[in-house]
Every structure is written in C-alpha cells, then in structure tokens.
Length: 180
Image 1 (cartoon, rainbow, N blue to C red):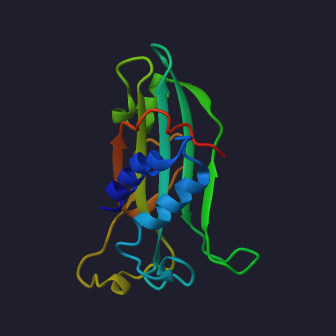
Image 2 (cartoon, one colour):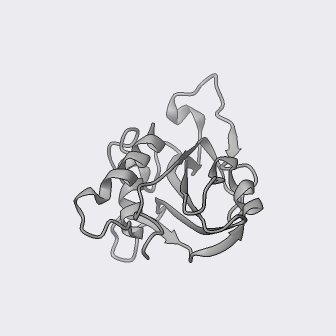
C-alpha cells in the first residue's frame, strides 16, 4: 500500500507547481508521507521500536535510442540517528543522470524496458530495513518475515529488506529526472 501511495504522490505533487520537475526534497517528503500508514508517530526513527525503518528506492529510465536509456537512481529512508541539530530527518540521495544500455535496464527490472524512444518508466521499491528486528515487535509470533532482495539483479545497490514491494509506473512528463 505504501508503494501505491508513493506512486500517487509522485504523479500528483507537481500539479500546483509551475515547474513540475520533482526535487530530491520532494522525494524525501513522499517517502516520509507514504509510510505514515504504519508509522503514526516518530516510530520510524531511532530507536525504531518496531525493529524496522522504511526505505524507498527510485529507478528512473527514459529511452533515448534503440539500445540506450537515460538513468537516474535515488533513495530516501529514515535516518537512524538524529542530524547535528538533533532533529529527526529523512536521508536522501540522488545520483547523476547516466546513459546505460538496455541490458542493464532489464537487469534492474524487466518492466522498466520501454517500447518507444522518449518513453519513461519509474521503479519504486518500498521495503523495511531491519534495525534490531524482532518479529514479536510487529506481532509475528508464528510467522517469520523473510528477507528479500529489492529488485533481483540490482545495478546500484545490494539491499536486503523485509516486506519488499516493487512497483513500476509511467510518470507524467516533466517530473523526472530528479533535481538535486
């Protein structure tokens, strides 16, 4: 559900803005708001009383020729420790725009492959990063949640988390690439 909420916010956030392009701060706010369905307070931050903290990965591609794509990777997740001012915050990062071959796009996720030049796709990976995880904190006494890789063959990172969900959407034109 959080991945769908994030996808909806990605598509709608720029509706009232003159410049529709999303920023890295927008992605942090989207990530924060999309996890409020489970975390109603600061429980997503340290000391992480549920033993998990939300994390999102964004993989953006745009087909620019028969075998080449523009590619950008961004992430947003809760910081485990407060920043220097003592405030809790979202940790965000966004890579530079790269040109990659279609085989690398397929390695990230097969649904990212576009049919026509100019098409764009966005993979949203939502998962819970274990942090002193204990299944009883979430009420799992008989069931042990299994860890899973976020996207299978991962190009940028080799993350493992619980309750991983991958969602691929076609973003509205002009939202991407992310401004740093």
